[in-house]
Image (cartoon, rainbow, N blue to C red; front, side, top):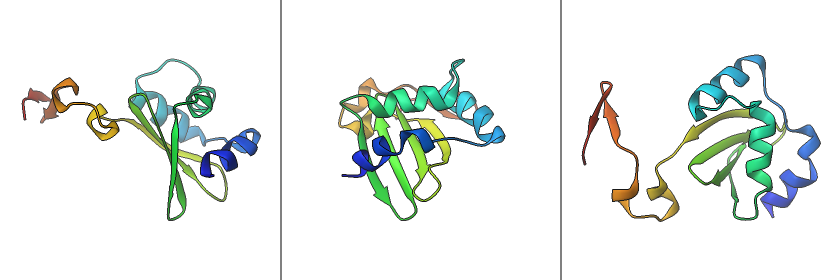
Length: 103
């Protein structure tokens, strides 16, 4: 249901100038962030949930936050695949004060 709303309004999805830099940095991508996020949303296996005023798109190893009323991409982050029900030992190393640690 929520995914359909986003796909029906895909032409309205955008971000701010600051959002472009933030999303590219957080996802470690060189591609144009809005197009990248839309392509992730369009994947069949993407999941969308609504919490409060935001939609959360989860796909592969990222979570994209989109405002429900303005369709602004607020932020996007890489997430541990553990959140997607994949074994914890397959998650990337965690960083504490810039140093990898094992949990």
